[in-house]
Image 1 (cartoon, rainbow, N blue to C red):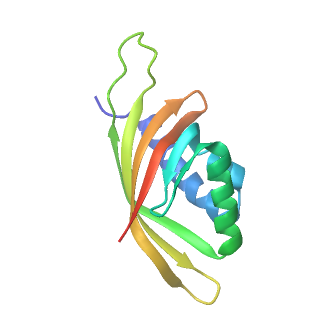
Image 2: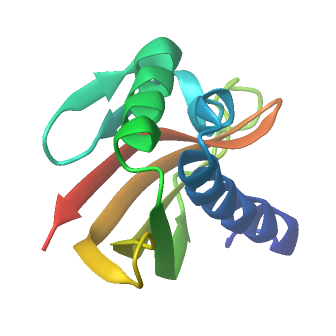
Image 3: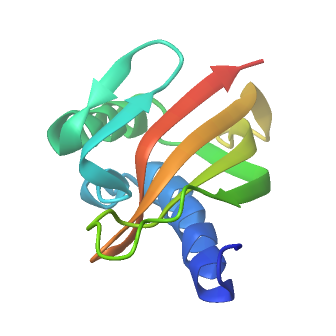
Length: 136
């Protein structure tokens, strides 16, 4: 069984909301891309929970307000299907390549790499449970 078209669209929107939120300084919106106890491994630090993830977004946007995240080549796979009545939510995994660049004085690429993601469908929609960034 594969992800439904609606699930796929919602997850792709999550990837877009994530990049837009951090690039515009929407710290709460960025943290809302994760489950409350979500984990974000940015390749340097492992950040856990809504408060820590929101603080990371604020520091990142403040330090580099002209940074843009371009996620591409997104691949999604359905996770293990929940058992009937077992109470476990649907899950998925995903990956995307990233080009991060500054736009202050032309375009300057500052980082490239790949996101490796675990996702869960919550009552509020699909969210990252764990997002790991591996720099090239």
